Length: 203
Length: 374
Image 1 (cartoon, chains in turn green, purple):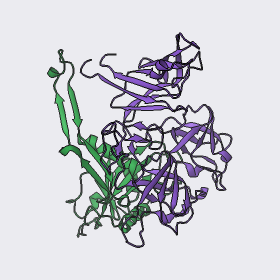
Image 2 (cartoon, chains in turn brown, blue; image 1 turned 180 degrees about the vertical axis):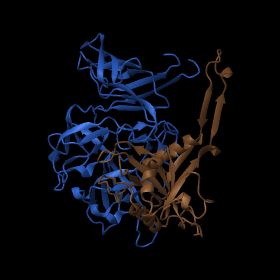
Image 3 (tube, helix red, strand yellow; image 1 turned 180 degrees about the horizontal axis):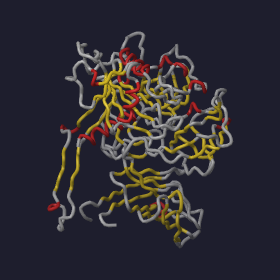
Image 4 (cartoon, chains in turn red, brown; image 1 turned 90 degrees about the vertical axis):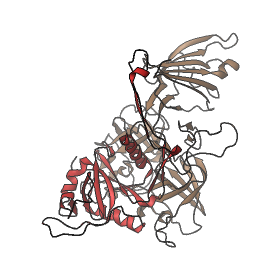
């Protein structure tokens, strides 16, 4: 049920938010693959725009292989980009496994780069073979808290409708299973959201 | 009519210069019936009377009945539209593209792109370009990965809504490797959306902005600019605001000049000229200039002035708009256009080529059905 809502919100942000093409990678495409400078640039831009961060930092602890995590914005990315994130290990990427504590890490969290914590999903938007050099283009949304508004209309958010086959016809052949929700979206502050478009380092 | 059937009806008036009619519905019909009311009240030779499309027929076709006689009695005849007829569509997901079509050449003097084979596009369609390199340092790769509204000028030619007759753009020839054009199947999922800027014309405080596709804005709504330094006019950007740090600068749309151009009232001084003459060398990682709708009244909703109490917003907003399936929209919200429905093209009779599917200046009624049992 919420998956439908998520997909609608995803398509909305994709349609409404301005795009920054990644330029920090080295694959020579437009957009390029993600480089750490892209994360730095986006975080700096959101900071300059006084966007609110979602998460406070995680203080360093005396544990092998861990490092402190900065206070952060959320970036929603595709699972297909995970190898590219791993490729940035040592140059800015900190795997979620290497956080001092996983207490505040979300189940879908893959890691962080500077002031951005990365959440991955297989439902993240991808435009296949749409880059200048025919690579897949991945759209990574980076949010400050005040960027978007989600409005539930008519005082309700979501209904799951199910009518079993008995009620749907004399021969009880057809059932009804549907989700109904009335919602609207608004971009309340464009300066607090970035759609960071990127390709992969390979193809 | 049984449990899962759907039916809808409506009407529209064809413009003096007919354009493709888009009918948004909450379902994808399996049967469409058109009826030209004007042909009954004001009959004329070759005027369309009725048309049908059924899902057992090919997309983009129609069976038609038109008036064959030149005078009374107005005896009808039948014919068949093989292309440019009635098609259904379903825009469930963002960013679906048609197949790659090889680009054969370009003509920068007229902003024309020529494909190696028939492109099958219609005026008003949206495409993206890929590659567009002639060599590693020449061509028009700057225009890749940006949606462009096209005007069809021939079966293998079309122009885009951008003037690339500039020094940093050079022509393609002999079907260069990797140069493709692809149709964007559902370019307007939410309205209004992010728009790419083709040109900005500054005249005092009147700033006319031309966009690469339909901007879908209405007078009175707020917009924000995101213009990289290479394009100039960075003073329009929503941030930084030198007076109030952290406070975004938005502008109101003061006029909608066309489907791809609107005017804002900008600052009286200090806005530098806009240039789209971008060097090929800057292409890796190039971010194009954009404008987005923000804040209040993005919906296209209009004040009540008689007629339907809560009309659905129509897009594009300047001319030739099609009503969305949405009811009255919330001010400040974007309109969901992830719709289904059907389109009526500009097809002609296969035998009688004077019989047009859309007769100019005629009022049509339509019925659309989705049946349980086909």
